[in-house]
Image 1 (spheres, rainbow, N blue to C red):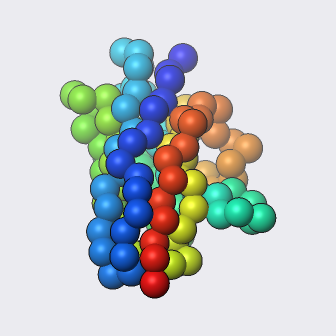
Image 2 (image 1 turned 90 degrees about the vertical axis):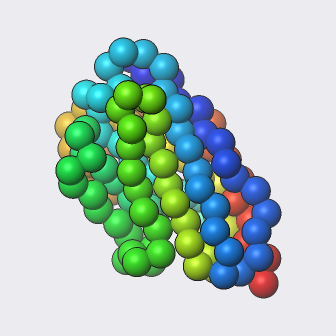
Length: 124
Protein backbone atom coordinates (compact mmCIF):
# COMPACT_ATOMS: atom_id res chain seq x y z
CA UNK A 1 0.00 0.00 0.00
CA UNK A 2 1.11 3.54 -0.64
CA UNK A 3 -0.46 6.81 0.46
CA UNK A 4 0.04 9.91 -1.65
CA UNK A 5 -0.05 13.60 -0.70
CA UNK A 6 0.30 16.38 -3.28
CA UNK A 7 1.58 19.88 -2.61
CA UNK A 8 2.83 22.91 -4.49
CA UNK A 9 -0.33 24.12 -6.18
CA UNK A 10 -1.36 27.75 -6.24
CA UNK A 11 -2.21 30.79 -8.32
CA UNK A 12 0.19 31.83 -11.07
CA UNK A 13 0.04 34.16 -14.05
CA UNK A 14 0.10 32.83 -17.58
CA UNK A 15 3.66 32.12 -18.66
CA UNK A 16 4.75 31.36 -15.11
CA UNK A 17 5.96 28.16 -13.49
CA UNK A 18 5.02 25.86 -10.63
CA UNK A 19 6.50 22.65 -9.28
CA UNK A 20 4.14 20.10 -7.81
CA UNK A 21 5.35 17.45 -5.41
CA UNK A 22 3.76 14.18 -4.40
CA UNK A 23 5.07 12.53 -1.27
CA UNK A 24 4.45 8.85 -0.69
CA UNK A 25 4.37 6.82 2.48
CA UNK A 26 5.55 3.24 2.66
CA UNK A 27 8.77 1.50 1.74
CA UNK A 28 7.47 0.22 -1.59
CA UNK A 29 7.30 3.57 -3.43
CA UNK A 30 10.16 2.64 -5.76
CA UNK A 31 8.18 -0.34 -7.05
CA UNK A 32 5.31 1.84 -8.30
CA UNK A 33 4.85 3.45 -11.66
CA UNK A 34 3.64 7.01 -11.10
CA UNK A 35 1.43 9.42 -12.96
CA UNK A 36 0.02 12.92 -12.79
CA UNK A 37 -3.56 13.64 -13.81
CA UNK A 38 -5.70 16.75 -13.77
CA UNK A 39 -9.37 17.56 -13.66
CA UNK A 40 -10.92 20.88 -14.59
CA UNK A 41 -14.47 21.80 -13.53
CA UNK A 42 -17.04 19.99 -15.63
CA UNK A 43 -14.43 17.88 -17.38
CA UNK A 44 -13.19 14.33 -17.03
CA UNK A 45 -9.95 13.53 -15.30
CA UNK A 46 -7.17 13.46 -17.86
CA UNK A 47 -3.67 12.06 -18.03
CA UNK A 48 -0.82 14.56 -17.85
CA UNK A 49 2.41 12.58 -17.43
CA UNK A 50 3.74 9.21 -16.31
CA UNK A 51 7.10 7.93 -15.11
CA UNK A 52 8.51 4.44 -14.68
CA UNK A 53 9.60 3.03 -11.33
CA UNK A 54 13.25 4.02 -11.85
CA UNK A 55 12.62 7.27 -13.68
CA UNK A 56 14.09 5.91 -16.89
CA UNK A 57 10.95 6.27 -18.98
CA UNK A 58 8.36 9.01 -19.21
CA UNK A 59 5.24 9.79 -21.16
CA UNK A 60 3.37 13.07 -21.65
CA UNK A 61 0.03 14.22 -22.92
CA UNK A 62 0.40 16.18 -26.15
CA UNK A 63 -1.07 19.26 -24.48
CA UNK A 64 1.85 19.54 -22.01
CA UNK A 65 4.74 18.10 -24.01
CA UNK A 66 7.70 20.45 -23.99
CA UNK A 67 6.30 22.50 -21.08
CA UNK A 68 5.95 19.98 -18.23
CA UNK A 69 8.55 17.59 -16.83
CA UNK A 70 7.87 14.64 -14.56
CA UNK A 71 10.64 13.28 -12.35
CA UNK A 72 11.03 11.24 -9.19
CA UNK A 73 13.42 10.79 -6.30
CA UNK A 74 12.98 7.32 -4.83
CA UNK A 75 15.28 8.13 -1.92
CA UNK A 76 12.80 10.84 -0.90
CA UNK A 77 9.67 8.88 -1.88
CA UNK A 78 8.62 11.83 -4.02
CA UNK A 79 7.47 12.44 -7.58
CA UNK A 80 7.51 15.92 -9.11
CA UNK A 81 5.80 17.77 -11.90
CA UNK A 82 7.65 20.85 -13.11
CA UNK A 83 5.23 23.04 -15.05
CA UNK A 84 6.58 25.87 -17.20
CA UNK A 85 4.94 28.26 -19.64
CA UNK A 86 1.63 27.76 -17.91
CA UNK A 87 -1.58 28.62 -19.73
CA UNK A 88 -5.07 29.39 -18.41
CA UNK A 89 -6.24 26.06 -19.83
CA UNK A 90 -3.86 24.29 -17.42
CA UNK A 91 -6.13 25.36 -14.57
CA UNK A 92 -7.32 22.23 -12.77
CA UNK A 93 -6.97 20.10 -9.69
CA UNK A 94 -3.83 18.03 -10.16
CA UNK A 95 -3.60 14.51 -8.77
CA UNK A 96 -0.75 12.07 -8.48
CA UNK A 97 -1.47 8.39 -8.83
CA UNK A 98 0.32 5.07 -8.61
CA UNK A 99 0.00 1.70 -10.28
CA UNK A 100 2.12 -1.42 -10.15
CA UNK A 101 2.08 -2.28 -13.85
CA UNK A 102 3.26 0.43 -16.21
CA UNK A 103 3.87 4.19 -16.43
CA UNK A 104 2.34 4.06 -19.93
CA UNK A 105 -1.23 3.86 -18.64
CA UNK A 106 -3.28 6.94 -19.42
CA UNK A 107 -6.66 5.77 -18.13
CA UNK A 108 -7.40 6.84 -14.54
CA UNK A 109 -9.21 3.59 -13.75
CA UNK A 110 -5.94 1.68 -14.20
CA UNK A 111 -4.29 3.51 -11.31
CA UNK A 112 -4.87 1.95 -7.90
CA UNK A 113 -3.72 4.71 -5.54
CA UNK A 114 -4.54 8.42 -5.58
CA UNK A 115 -3.70 11.55 -3.68
CA UNK A 116 -6.26 14.14 -2.63
CA UNK A 117 -5.26 16.68 -5.29
CA UNK A 118 -3.84 20.19 -5.34
CA UNK A 119 -5.40 23.18 -7.09
CA UNK A 120 -3.51 24.96 -9.86
CA UNK A 121 -5.00 28.19 -11.16
CA UNK A 122 -3.44 30.09 -14.07
CA UNK A 123 -4.67 33.62 -14.61
CA UNK A 124 -4.58 35.34 -17.98
